[in-house]
Picture 1 (spheres, rainbow, N blue to C red):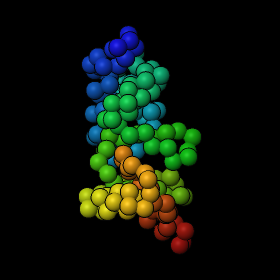
Picture 2 (cartoon, rainbow, N blue to C red):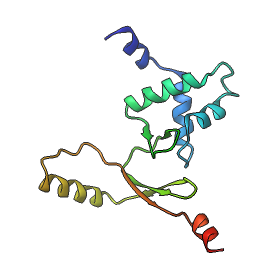
Picture 3 (cartoon, rainbow, N blue to C red):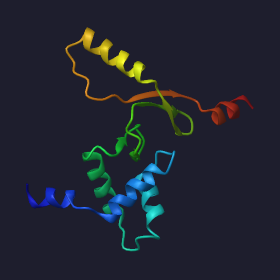
Picture 4 (cartoon, rainbow, N blue to C red):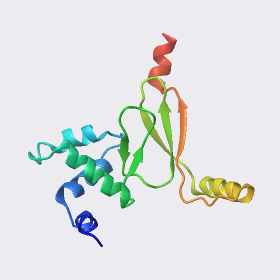
Length: 138
């Protein structure tokens, strides 16, 4: 194991707090939002440090990086299979839990019709949230 990988595995209070902040929010925040939440607690915290720790958490499988084509990636600590409902008007992202049998059914469908091995799923549904839909009706 090289020196860099060894450092990634070392316990980090900042990394633990980043994970806790992500677990405590229902939103899908950017690294900047995480930085803003933790800066008062860690005055020497830099945005680069937040990005490094988020990347480590992603590599460890504790956090998902979500790229919805916006300028900034978003992150979440909810790693169980679920749908993302993405509003195409305001960009809000909502989670919707999906029964396990639906995930299994999709995986079986993929494997029965292709030579593809499913390792994980990420599903997104695009539309309009209630606020944007109501705003458009006015």
